[in-house]
Picture 1 (cartoon, one colour):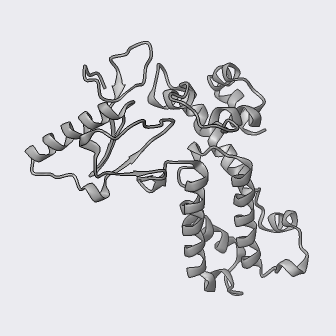
Picture 2: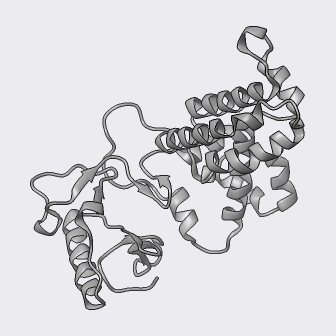
Picture 3: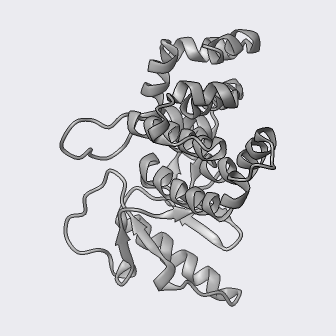
Length: 269
């Protein structure tokens, strides 16, 4: 939105007045700021305006999360008493890292899968129906928000392992039967789940790249990270892994995404 306030993040470098101050959905809100001093003022501003309409902020449900930021000295007075966390959840997704979000979703998916084990092990229900139920009731939980995951190797391997383990239970194939995963996928007429996720990511990326002008999604994808990175090997980024998957540079992806037919060829790789 257009604003003259100092709260928020600049999303369009060519227009510093266009900022993103917060993310809102129903009674959930995330305040976005570059410094703790501004965050404290933003927090006080929200609290004062909320009180005008009879709303209050619950401190026990309010968390502070730092991204590429190391605090020096005590926090501003307005932020005292708020818990600082490394992992946080917003609208059902853990926003600290793709791996933590995946692991939380895999745990929930396993829990729901075992609740229906009588269906998966039934000899009277066809494999086709089991797979349709699996897609609707289990994969819909596991793969929510995968379009924005940084698909590192450990996530790929564990995605594939989750899916093949479920298929083996449906087929009543034990590990001791020495049936290879490739054969299990062939019987189920399925691809590796990691490949399915990668394809979905490329399709979504094509939509983002075709949007006209400077959008929030483009800012999130291509804006240079701010702040100071931690010591150690640089983390894998979404764009770098997409480049490895497609074998294309960022400029080449932007160009090919404009042609839907050409982008379908890229997705089909």
